[in-house]
Amino acid sequence: MQLKLKLVAGAAAIVLGGAAYAQDLVVKIGHVGPTSGSIAQLGKDNENGARMAIEQLNAKGVMIGGKKAKFELLAEDDGADPKQGTAAAQKLVDSKVNGVVGHLNSGTSIPASKIYSDAGIPQISPSATNPKYTRQGYKTTFRVVADDVHLGGTLGRYAVEQLKGKSIAVIDDRTAYGQGVADEFEKGVKGKGGKIIGREFTTDKATDFTAILTKLKASKPDIVFFGGMNAVAGPMLRQMKQLGIQAKFMGGDGICTADLPELSQGSMADGQVVCAEAGGVEGAQKDAMTKFYADYKAKFGVDVQIYAPYVYDAVNVMVDAMVRAKSADPKVYLPVLAKTSGYKGVTGVISFDEKGDIKNGALTLYTYKGGKRDQIAVVR
Image 1 (cartoon, rainbow, N blue to C red):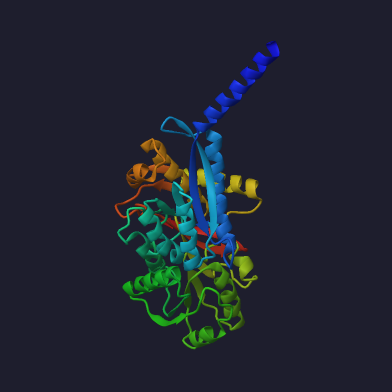
Image 2: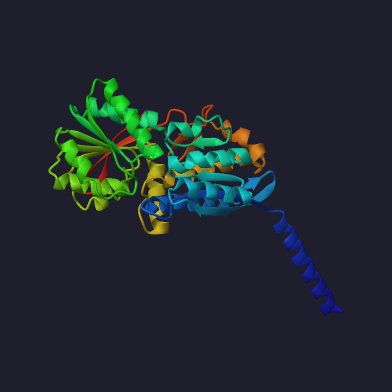
């Protein structure tokens, strides 16, 4: 009889334990980035930032509406391809995710944004900078970095005012990001009275730039701006050196990565490259970013490439809105997310404007010395 009582009590405990577990709120966060292809290192960097955030949130035991939240990361690869990106977006919608952080590229974020909008699922991009992304009238699109109007324009003005560029050449890779940032750079140059001596085009998968560089060399540029990503910028820098083009090389956050010196195979002169990263911290805020970089390397064994801290903040901003709304239901927490103001992340203070853009977004200007990125200044 005593043994029977023990068995019944044990069964009751299992049932009660199951009931307690059933009370947990499962929250699915989708992440999309190019974890295959030429910029897979950047996509993996982003995904790692999401994983860090999810693991820390689960360790904290976050409560949403009186229930303990159990966060799950649903990670998809879009290969930086718009068609693959929309397929990944639909897959996440079908999986009934509570929110999405991504995509990395403007060219994938923009077409995917309609799918999320139609489903009413909030999307925060940590790195898509094309202005169109948040200017389509969707209520579900947000970003935690400054857009190309700010980034490209700032670099254009810097080229004329600080680098004293007299003959400036522009190349872009014809992607939504590359063409967009190059267009804004050109506007910034012309707005300060600078001269564009040539505009050439390539693709995001090209490896040979001899023809366009030879054409530009005849005009003797003192600055070459490239709108595109680091996987293309590295070989371009090598071929510039081979052709004897000693111009300064400029670009946006797509080239402004820790591994650009490696991708250029040592062909960069100290101070030759000037680039800008959307985002930036100063003063006491640097301590939080420094800690993130150290924690990231301890966890993954590699350095942060560029966007991981912004992904980390995007996940946390999304969850903060759920906590404040007391619900992970997208239609309930979406209006709360839209009103985010003064959130203190590792990348700085995050507040959204009426379009979903970050207010007063910072940019960090960098160069490279001794094979390492060297900060020039944080500008707003």
